[in-house]
Length: 139
Ligand SMILES: [Zn+2]
Image 1 (tube, rainbow, N blue to C red):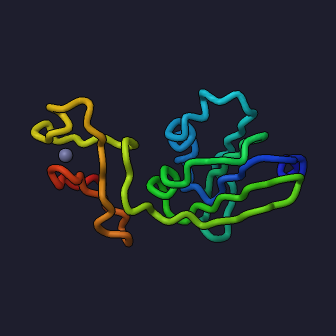
Image 2 (cartoon, rainbow, N blue to C red):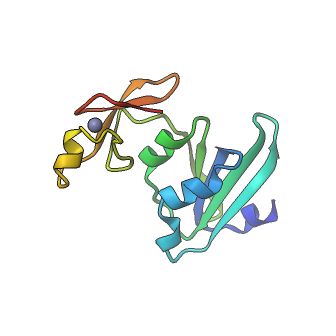
C-alpha cells in the first residue's frame, strides 16, 4: 500500500465489490479525466473477502450519487495535503438522474429523447430503483 502514502491530494474509493472496479471507472467517466488514476483488483479484504479499489490523484471532488447507486459498502476517502480529510460511507441516493436508462420501450423516455431519465429508490435494502414514469424496476 505504498501508493496510498504518496498521494498528496486525491480520492480513494474503497470497498468496491470485487470485479466491479472497471465498471465503476467507466460509470464515473474516469477515462476522460487527465488525472492519474489506478484501479486495483481483487485485494484481500477482511470485511468482503476480495475487493477492488480506485485511486484518483489530484482530484478531490466526485459524484457520490453514482457511487451510491452502484455498489453497497463503498467508502470514499478524500485526501488533502497527505491527510485523509474526509471519509464517508455512500448511501444509495433517493433519486438518480440520467445515470441509467429505462429499458421499457413503451416508456415515455423512449418517445421523448429530451426527457430526463429519473429513477426512484423503492427499496434501500436491496437498492432497487424504479422508473418514475413507467415504474419499471431496474435491478
Ligand atoms: Zn420507464
